[in-house]
Image: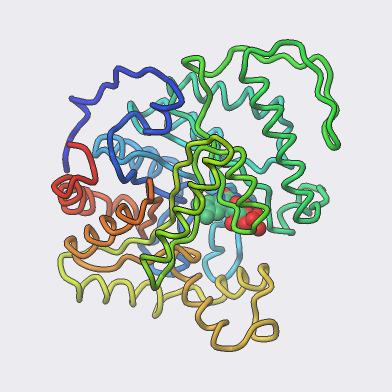
Length: 383
Ligand SMILES: Cc1cc2nc3c(=O)[nH]c(=O)nc-3n(C[C@H](O)[C@H](O)[C@H](O)COP(=O)(O)O)c2cc1C
């Protein structure tokens, strides 16, 4: 693997611009998604599936940091999905996970994923500032509003209706941004939050604030992201690069209307092996033959997707999409193919991609050794 640890002790200024560039010069940023959860994002029974435990997370983060991967994005998940593997049944809480990893690494950006309705914003703002200081400006926030009813019931918190979730999140993020700014001793009196004499010190590193991302899929969720966030995750089309390019351009244009620069990202599921056949065989082995179908069906049921609610063909399609990476874009092939797909996504205007692997530690070295240099040669990643 490329060892950049000797060369990238970053002379960092924690400006928002540098934070958004993740302190690098990669036209296509690459992150790892879901490593804080058991099984990661592969709903599979294969024995080498991801443990999600702390030693593996720490090892992975250091490996990724040294190899030049740009970011780590965890999943805020409180309750597993059951099935034969209790898919994502063991998860590391994302703020504390981020703190540990930021202390163990030197240049990689680490996100915390926060359910706004479950975290008091004063506490969340301070936890995030603490993480940001530990990482010297490398903490990022993924704000989520929640969708999984069972998780909220476990907290004894009533899930709001969909529109209200984002209205609440708007107040939540407004308060947090104010705490992170120079504002002192202010009151906030919104429709949901009523707070007096708010004060929060220290401020985030560098007189700026952590990068904020969101992955709302609904029009309301997308509008929220475009209004408030620096990074927006959207679903890439599985069939048309032009369609992906249009989605990206639309999001960026909408952000410009609000005077905002928006990084647009997507989610991918990579299986990269020396030959196309090996990659396709391994994919089939993990994601078809040994998929944890009972977990997949449980997840689909939570989203109200079943043969009773959608046509059978659509159900079967969703079923296979959710087995591999919960719907992320599958990128399966040899290094040339994987690199080409990533280059195409960059050409479609994407700022970055969060990928998952079946076993991150086993598979990352090959990806970094073979795919990253190809991306560098294509000018998609810095030297
Ligand atoms: C990259 C990415 C990360 C996400 N992370 C989480 C998460 O950690 N926890 C969660 O409950 N939802 C997560 N989501 C779900 C979204 O935040 C969002 O709720 C979902 O896409 C539905 O969109 P909507 O809220 O606009 O209906 C994630 C989605 C994506 C694409």
